[in-house]
Length: 105
Figure 1 (cartoon, rainbow, N blue to C red):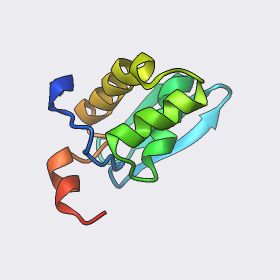
Figure 2 (figure 1 turned 45 degrees about the horizontal axis):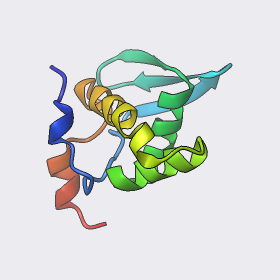
Figure 3 (figure 1 turned 60 degrees about the vertical axis):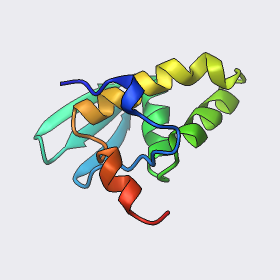
């Protein structure tokens, strides 16, 4: 089930789950999920979001970084970023926010 966007707080830290690796094939990123034994094909924007998640950003920092990458205001990318993060969580590719919040930064 997909996590509602309103449950994602700007202060949540994003952390890829262990066992998920990425490779680049042309313009697409491909995630290999060893835990769920699945492969996920990402478009360029979702690949960029994933790559930024590796550094464990907060949601607000991720939005700011994407906005800067595409030379857009943060409000213009916010909904798309939240939708991508929600999808990653729904597919079990990112740690749940409660577990990540409990860790020190």
